[in-house]
Image (cartoon, rainbow, N blue to C red; front, side, top):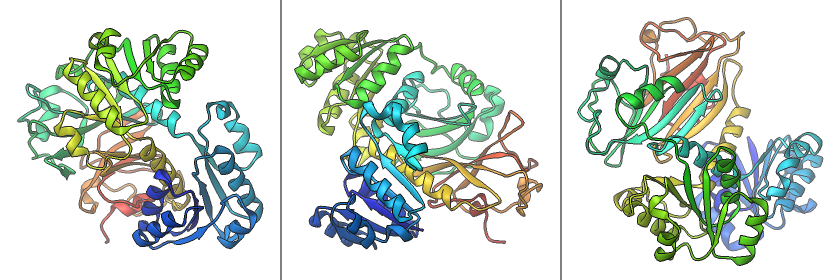
Length: 455
C-alpha cells in the first residue's frame, strides 16, 4: 500500500519504521529537513519538506493516488486539515491524531461527516490502558479481546509464586484452570512455549483465558489483590485528566499533584471530586506528606521520563503495591526492570500499535480479517485476533489442529465460538464464524493463513 505520514515526531518515526519494514511504500512529510534526513538514513522511504496541510505539498506526495494518510503532527487542527485535503484529492483512507479533550465529543462527527477513517487520542488510549492495569493490581499488562470475553494478562513470577518450578503441561491438572501461558520473557529472551517448559522465578509470563477463568486462577495461585481505592497521580496533563475522570467514576479516591498553579485550578474545575495538590511531584517530602505510602497505587505521568522513573522507584521502595510509570524515550526496558520499575506505559507505542492494526486490517484477505492487534512482552510479541467469515473456504478449516503445520514461534492461543472460549487442543478445529487468537514473534501478519507453514 502507498501510505503518507505527516509529522515525523515520536509516533511518526515509529510508524515510518514499522510500515516500511512491512513492505509498504511510505512517504513522510515534515517541515524539518534534518528530521527527514534521519528518516531517509534509517528507512527506505521518500521524504518531502513542507506543510502537510498544504494542497501543493500533498499533491507532490501523491495523496490522490495513495491508500492512506496518517497525520500525527503536534497540532490537532493541522492533522484534521491534512486529512480533509487529502480526502478531497482522492486519498482512500485518513487517520488523524486528535489529542484535545474538547474534541472528544466531536470525534463521531469528524469520522462520519468529515470522512475520517480513524481518529486516535494517545492520551485517552493510555488512560484506558492504565485503568485496566489498576483493575488487575498484580498485572504488568492487560489486554482484552471480544469486549473482555478473553483476557490477556502479563505477570511477573516473584519469589514465593507457586507457579515457579511448574511445567506448563501440569498447570491445568494442578489448578483445574482453563488458562494458557502463551508467552514467556526470560533473561531478555522471548519464548513461545510448549508444554515441557518449566516456569522460573523472574519469568514474565502472559496468560490468556476468559475473565472468570483468569480470576479463579489468580485466586488459586494467591495473587488476587483487593480493589484499588486510593490512587495518587503525579502530573496533571491530559492523560491524568482522562484517567482521574474514569477512576473517580468507578469510586476511587484520586489525588493529583501538579507543579503548574494554573493547571491545578483547571483540574479543580473539571474534576471537582479529585484532591488537587499544587507542588513538585519530584519532592519526596511532599509525596510522603500527601500520603503516598498509604496509597494503593501511584501513577507517574509527568512530561519527563527520568522524573517518572525516579518517582516510581521511590513509590516502590515506600511499599506502594501498584506503581506505573509513563516512559516514552527510554528503549531499554530491561534496565527499568533491573532497578525495580516493572509496569510501564508508552502513549506513542499504544498509538502506533492501533494504527498498524488499522493498516493490516485494510490488507486482510477474504478468508479471515484482522480484528484486533496488541503488543505484549515489552512489545516484542504480537497477539492478534482474526475473524473467520461464515463463507470462508480456507484449507485449514474443519481440520484437527494436530494435522495442521504452523510456523515456528506461532501459538494458537484461543478460539471463541458460540459464546464459549476454547483453549485449543489437538482435536479441536477452526470453523467459519470463529474468532481466533494468535500469539507470535513474527510481525506483519494480516491474515490467519499467514500463521501456517507452507504446504
